[in-house]
Image 1 (cartoon, rainbow, N blue to C red):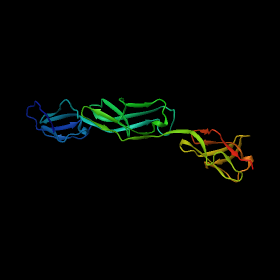
Image 2: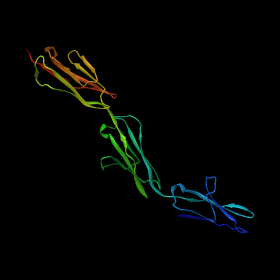
Image 3: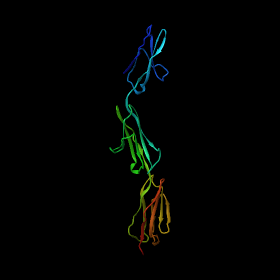
Image 4: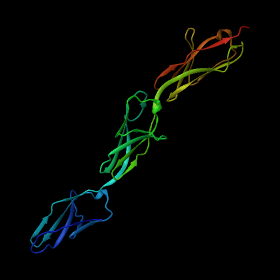
Length: 248
């Protein structure tokens, strides 16, 4: 509890006391003393009293009440907001409400106990897909600490490690079926697979199918095949694989 006491020199004696908070239009209390129980940060501010007798009214000089409290409302903001692509610069900023102000900030990636930074900001100068994950900050003041909710950082990148896997090895007999599967990594996932036969750069198929099936294979199907994978960020071609057809 905090108690403010008003005193005044008056003749005749003061008849009534009224309490005011600066920037509030209505009185907050009356009587020679004004008490605040269960004080909170909302009670911080400047207070003054007014004394009245038969001849008039006079105000005191204001006194300031400062309420200390531990960090609260701790949050992380991501700049730039929205889509994050690999190689871009990304800054996470920790903000909190505390009195006295927070003097230490710590950054962590969810699932780890390694402190990444001790500043108010965590900056990735060239962010990579390995940096994807959840991040939170810890704000510390003289009165305590608070962790922010984790924010999710998703780093988008073009297709990579693109390669072709074949369900057959060596020479394939005429009339058999060979299935080639294009694999790799991308975020967002690839939306287009284009199959190309290298000799003459003949485009065979293009669409959402990551497999190319060569049914009832013929000698003219021998050659090198590659796939081109594309997503919203970019594209990549696989190394070529050779399909060999046995002579009859």
